[in-house]
Length: 314
Image (tube, rainbow, N blue to C red; front, side):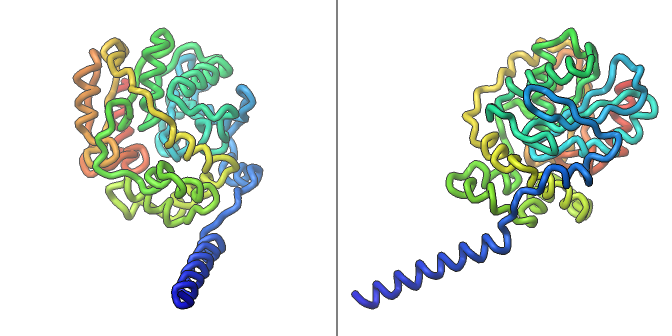
């Protein structure tokens, strides 16, 4: 009995030491928003107040263009995901992009409602605040689903639609970022709100890239540091544990706008069969699949993917 008691004490002590070790080496405090702004919100970044949110956005290019290109990023990302595209597009178009609530510098929804319906309302409010009455709307992954759901609800606002490895159809992922898995796992997701190893962010990025050599230290740092924006880690958990409603995919067949379905052939998170479903269901869709590219073509293969977008726009 004494031996058993001693073994239990040793086990508990070991677990305690392990927890302390993890907290000391992998526990991170939130980074003050002003510090992040100094690094990631340099001009042309701006902020606009929408329902208690200080929304980070960029509005670049031909500002007199009344039909701008509006781009929406995916889960865990930020408006910076479109940096390479915007650098070229702004020479001929007006380009508007924002950090969605829960990601980047914008911060979490005050009501913690991360449903697609609430994101669609957010985009409505954002466009209204910017005085945008008509646009070319595009999105990647989560941003893609927000884009087509917005278009189905507000067809008069969208002139053309761009879906980049877009979500919406039932999930048939062959692989997914480890951060997403942890965020959905009870207990572990609680730890995730204050224990967030940088290598976890790097592994998650490598999961959505085919060419791992393109996952640079600077790229990992950006994703990692913006994850540490106050409230973002809890928001990711809230988003991932949200009781998912069945997506109204029947609405896709009603979308009449010319649409470019742009996909990475090696996307393991949202495989190309979903690209073909969009192409088949959308009445006026073109399909462009990039070989040797993963889930984020605008980051991993910006020049090739942009060429396809420019051909579509012209």
